[in-house]
Image 1 (tube, rainbow, N blue to C red):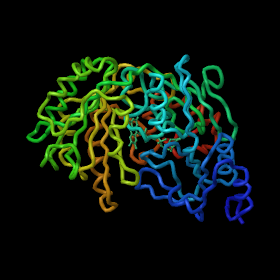
Image 2 (cartoon, rainbow, N blue to C red):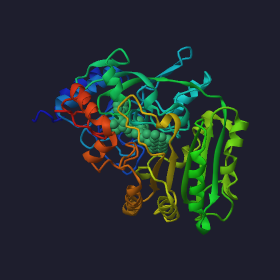
Image 3 (cartoon, protein in one colour):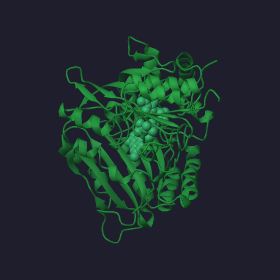
Image 4 (cartoon, rainbow, N blue to C red):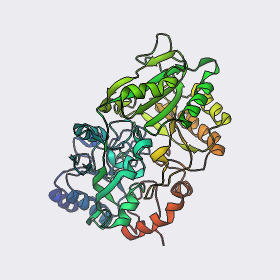
Length: 468
Ligand code: FAD
């Protein structure tokens, strides 16, 4: 029997006996549920899924994978688009049970378990009138999002999630539990700020939190983009962003009104739209005034703008990305959002392969545009363009993937050649793109990787090879 053959039941039994959480193998009644991740296109069958309850469980799981030479997938919230939270014939460490959130409101710091979601963090921090910059969707994991960047409605005011990471507890490739902070293993902390899952499994994050009022102004309006108005809307958006205050984080998105969508004027299904969405910190009335030009661009096909609780803003898109649908998202950091790039975005927005897809244009400025003291390489681009193909049937995979790739390659000449690595397809483009996206951070990150994971055990991610 080979060393890495899990038919050695005693080995698996030994693992099961020691783990505080639960070990799920293909014969377990929960296996079908436990193996699945949010993106239904990734249909994989791990050999062992460990539902970790503690750092000690994570440590055991890492040792188990290492000892048996099995590929290791690490899952926080399970919403990685690339699907690295699951793996065929390998070990999955699922941290979903490790979801505690505690706030130190004096220090304005929040400590979060490695499997918590942003919605859980927002609910607790808002009790103290605080928030940590996360994403724009409440069900994504803190872990995957924060470790590789983190763009949300607080980005231009308070920076990306990774820039707000002040400490972490980490299980290393050698199964040690170590701390990373300004005083303990500071290079490890540096690598966690943007380096993805490359250097260890994070069992606890501590973030800086910021004052955010319970009620904020949120813009969410879909404008009709028939008759060529899509390009005009995107030009207006670009020009508006040039003078927008840093208290404001904005996004435009282009697509067609989906069949059966709620809240749109009757008869609008299939019509092209350009939507504007954004949040303003501070006095909601002032927020409404600041964003009025975007609101009044045209006659809306739908309008969900208004004053609302911050925690509800964070859930505004939750229903649009159900578990198990098929998803393929990419991104380009666009340095030149001139008329040619805008025409390309508007044209692709009118002709998606699925009416559930959109092209998202994120405005990146203020604190989000400042260099991060970490592995995240800040692009000089003011716009992150992110075509996201969302569809239902496997028969439509090729058309949707092709639509996304086609727009990315059209936009490449207007970009700096980097990606946001959380929106990087299935990360199939390989080492060169990862190297380009880490830019001048790459060598230092590879050196940290060599120190903490010299065998590249943590490789199901935008992988950085250990420096030789
Ligand atoms: P997982 O699949 O669990 O993890 C992704 C990867 O992170 C894993 O493969 C692993 O490499 C690593 N990882 C996970 N947990 C750990 C851990 N505890 N320790 C070490 N490594 C770990 N991004 C934004 O920036 N802003 C957004 O607004 C935004 N919105 C999104 C909306 C939706 C619906 C989705 C699906 C994604 C969105 N994203 C956004 C992208 C998001 O940042 C990534 O998909 C991210 O990977 C999700 O993290 P997760 O923990 O849920 O995923």
